[in-house]
Length: 217
Image (cartoon, rainbow, N blue to C red; front, side, top):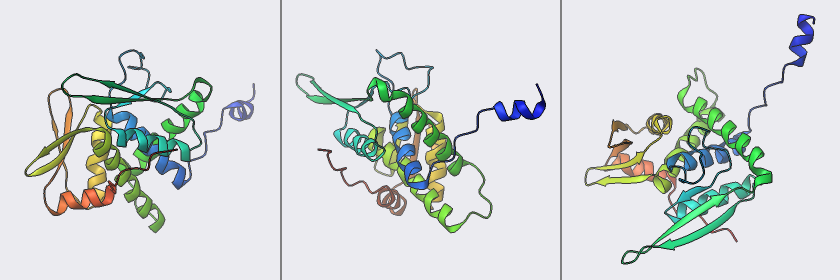
């Protein structure tokens, strides 16, 4: 086979996502990476975007993910389980129907790859548009972590606990893009990313726009 024929037979890489789609897909990816996979899905080692359920213990995180998937035209099933005796809790389980899982997995994985590259990769001479969207991606990562990650709040810091090392790195870089220094340190089986109380905490909260997400109909 001629070399030029072999080149023509290679699959072409998918085009990059537009900024609006990227922001939503990247935020979904961050939400999924904030929580461990359900024990009954076998998702470990297979990547986090296989359409397997994501479980959140905060309704705001589940509603935000539903809102984002609706904008991406991805259907999702939302089940709520109530448990506990003296201290009641709700577990929100979101799953993409089987016929849509492949498209969902490709979209969210592409959102994560492209968003991670925008935040962690060098951007010399970036355009004004790119600089604006990079700060929006940084805010989306922090919004996901504050909604779905483990809160680590002390008098002098605002922090989140994560099991995903890559997401922790994204948060540190994202904070820098928002003009906030962040610290990353290992915890007990996790990583803790934190910012100082005061102006830095307020800037993160303002950038992440932590008003409750609207509940989908």
